[in-house]
Amino acid sequence: MTNGNPDIIIIDDDPMVGELSRDLLTDEGYKVILIQDSINAIDIVRTQKPRLVISDIMMPGITGMDICKTIKSDPELKAIKVIIVSGKSYQVEKQRAFQFGADFFLQKPYNVETFSKTVKNILEETSAAPSPPPSAPIKGGLVIEQEDDKLQASDLDPGQIRLTIWGARGLPSAIPNAVSKYGRQTSCVSVETRENIFVFDAGTGMLSLGKDIATRKKYYKEIWVFLSHFHLDHILGFGNFAPIHDPNFAIHIVGANDPERTLRETAQSLFYSSYAFTKSPPHAKIDLYEVLEDNYEIMPGVKIATMYANHPTSTLIYSLEISGKKIVYSPDSEIWGEATALQDYDEKFGKFAANADIFIHDSNYDDKDYETNKKQGHSGLANVVEFAAEKAQAKELILFHLNSEYTDQALDAMLAAAQTLIKTKGYSLQCRLAAESQTILLKGNI
Image 1 (cartoon, rainbow, N blue to C red):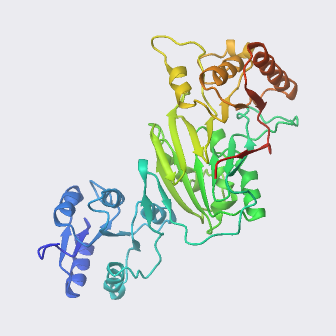
Image 2 (image 1 turned 60 degrees about the horizontal axis):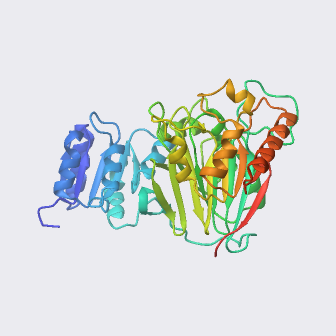
Image 3 (image 1 turned 45 degrees about the vertical axis):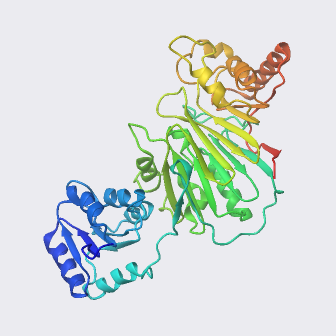
């Protein structure tokens, strides 16, 4: 850094607050630049490369949150410290600031007697209040928090993988009175290893998973949650997921933005809206990761691939590769069963899901009902079985997103039809219906 570079850039459209902050810091010997037009702020930061940026949130043009996110996501700028200053004291604003990489959140009106000391502490990395632990960027743009200590050993052996179904139904138009041996909760599946847990979707089945984690004091403090999309039956359980309200956990939420509703907006409505299915805001540390159709390595030896599903709204299919095993999760997806010049979904999906050890797929309709419900985003039984065996060449198929209107007898008939088809065509495919509390153990490579 040359001698002409400022120590601090202040971005605040309120001249009284901005000038007071500048004068207080100038008196302490810092070289300070005040910017009142946020539109030009990023260009000036790039040019001047200060040690610290102090930015208000609510400004015309570009908000302080956007400025913080831009700085912290730019490899050339991310070393710059950022203090977010705001008169908005909402907890969600503080969490959002830390989520975007802020080093400190300072509420207005701040104490003029301690302001300079706070800035000095931030610059010297001895902040007066703790900020979230640093995140390390890795391939594909996802990040993982660095774990500073280990919890008690897991009950799983090294290389062992446990998959558990917590909910597998669609959301009914009316709450059924009949008990079902397959359960009535909506989509949620967990995949555990000795060190980590990965959760796919946050339907009502997630409540049982949360109770299990809280009761048994599980062996990890970071939980990855992968949302397929934002339809209610896939997010309804999140607000009352026990670890969300436990400060000992960090929850990493992964999903795709939809033009109608972003991942961030969805999280805010789940946890902070007046209509949220929770009585209190989260106490766990929450990170949001917006993903596209791509491949990601979220930690050494753990890979996630994503593909957009043939289903209304921006819906993701996930492929998890871990310990030499491949688990594909596709809860809402319509397999056409026939290719045309304008439709190559089945071919593309077949390559994506190829050689899956566990293939979890939407099987919402039996073949008769599918004939009258085609082109609505859910699959028929025969198409799923044939796809799993022929195109995905999966080892085991789990029929998922079970129709909420189907009785146990109807579901039993679906499974029997699937087994008959497998036998008739000579497929080497194992098949089962998803049922709550169902557990599958896989022995992966150590």
